[in-house]
Length: 246
Picture 1 (tube, rainbow, N blue to C red):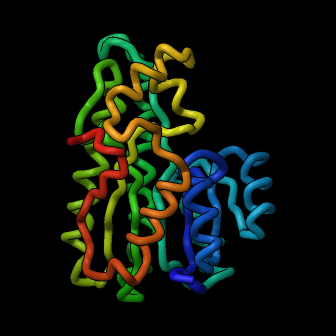
Picture 2: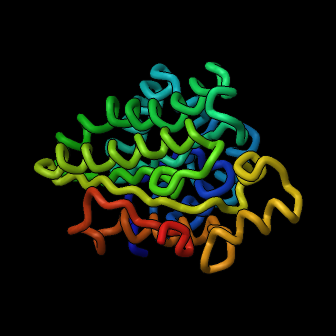
Picture 3: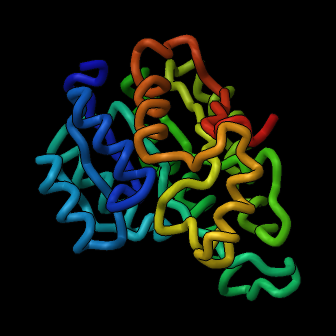
């Protein structure tokens, strides 16, 4: 029960890594507000975990403003924010990515982190406590060809994590990131540019430990960094990647 009675917001929690993080946090005693744009999947996950949910597009200012009002009216505080929501463009030459695809990647992967800070950081400063966890990627540390703008968005997130950590440390607010390698999530097919066994094996060959990241891997790492056990850790990017970045 490492997160007992902690109020935690997890974005992109209807599937994939976000769902795994939500499951682990729930097992560890946290009270969750699960956030996702996919209302049907979100309701199923929240029901299965007996946790609260809020349907939102995290790339939109008005949606984050409404989330803030909802959380503080109902719970009066927030202890943990996990910025997990993410998207990608399909593998292609950097000049072939459309402006619409580019905007979507940066709105979901980067702007959502900015909006979470805009609305929730002032509350954490007032309380003089809190934890923010950004779900980055090995792509931000060791970029893969033909995922250029996705790589860049995750590199942005890593720099943002460190910048946020330095600025918020005097307020006792910690900010860290985890960097998973690709896992068995809805985005895997997009990362690989297909779902054939050949593409899977080619992708796996770049991971020394020989397997994809799992939602459970992310849940375990996220739980540690968001718990009081990690009270001296801020501004770090924990690679949960089976050796991908070695």
